[in-house]
Image 1 (cartoon, rainbow, N blue to C red):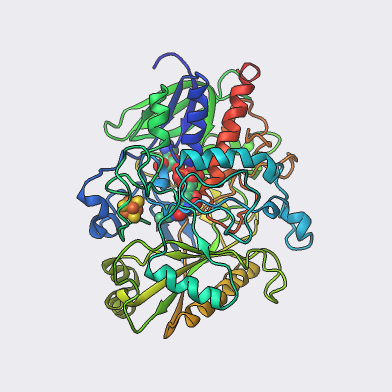
Image 2: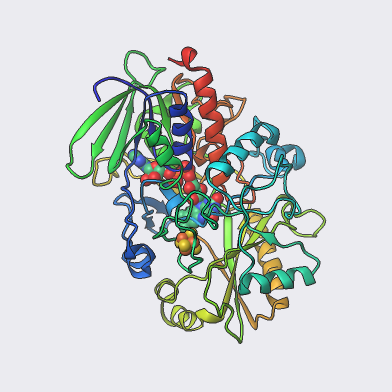
Length: 520
Ligand SMILES: Cc1cc2nc3c(=O)[nH]c(=O)nc-3n(C[C@H](O)[C@H](O)[C@H](O)COP(=O)(O)OP(=O)(O)OC[C@H]3O[C@@H](n4cnc5c(N)ncnc54)[C@H](O)[C@@H]3O)c2cc1C
Ligand code: SF4
């Protein structure tokens, strides 16, 4: 521990785990620092009361979200080794080719929209690797907007269950092209692990049997087997730059179990704490003043403008009571020729109906209580609306507002634009049309106000006057500091972001290894 680590990675989510794996495979000495702990694979994992209501994995550190003149709310994320992947739904989509050049496609849509400094072709080999490492099960050639692939998926998803069949049949009747969601789930146990039993507690829950291919059962064990060390229950408080401004030499940490503070030294530092915590950590480390461009840190936060259309049916929708986050629709992805709002819209996908106790607690009385009673008769469609960048949507810190570890609490200022809300409404209308065709008696819309898809707070780009990171995700002005979580994305895309974060982190990891002698 006294020697400098070759690489210290902060955070074990998609960004951190993938970059660490690339580095250990090249023989580097890697330490991962993670504030969460390993999840318990016991009965609590699928217990709605313990996970969703008691919040067993709730972080002690909130995000503070001031509301224009109306006080504030505090949002407490879950935390664990493996990051949000442990609780996620496993939907593993690639961005579309057009996502990398949105400004070219819509030159007048938004003054802060920028093209990516890389194209789909540069990311495609890393999408292949990420799908392999995450064991994604999908059916190539069925997504009408699919970007080019060099081969099929390595595994197939199971046939549609009743709710997915119902949605797919209705969509087809309307002339749409429904297809199976590519899922990072071990359906067929090629590697001796217990396969998925297709339960109803997947999205939002850890998998009790480890069949969800989250990072804590796939990439992190591989990184550890390759020599990486994971230090859990440890918060990175600040990055220190000694002997000159342009290199991070130490990370100040706190052991949350003992309360002990200590520092670790590094040759290369990779920040991958998630789009909101990473920005707060960089700002708390004084990097907001770094030249030429620290002022971009925390800016352009996006989170997708998402919501759910809930169909209420007369009959039971899932009589077999099995997993049903299965069907996807990308027909409206760029929204062109459909007469709706300008710019990209996004996609629609099936979503697991949450357990009745959670519906009751979230919705309150009487809506939640009634919803919980009708849970067997519901179908949920998730509408992921693409939101556009705005520098005023940002993460900031106030040194006077700290958490129990004396670290600044991220303050999140965010407002959707009219166009973002219009994109969501357009998807709501399409989702409701499908559910009406499927026989839903009533359709209800519910916006999602979480930060589960937070991204964009340290965007990468060629132009140091308009981005925080260079095209290799290195912070402009600090030669050994990389940021590889969802922060790097300059636009949000219209699909779930995890596979893109993973692919980019593998790309950056390969670059760090190739450039090692020049970097250190
Ligand atoms: C319920 C849910 C369902 C989702 N479903 C999907 C889906 O189906 N498909 C999809 O693509 N995406 C999904 N997402 C989104 C996806 O999980 C995230 O976009 C992705 O995990 C983000 O990865 P990341 O590497 O940016 O950060 P994270 O996964 O947030 O990882 C960051 C890690 O850093 C740790 N950390 C933070 N601060 C510190 C610190 N100071 N010191 C040490 N450690 C720190 C955190 O505890 C965390 O483990 C879902 C998210 C949620 C919450
Ligand atoms: S559906 Fe499968 S992967 Fe998801 S929690 Fe259940 S068993 Fe695990």
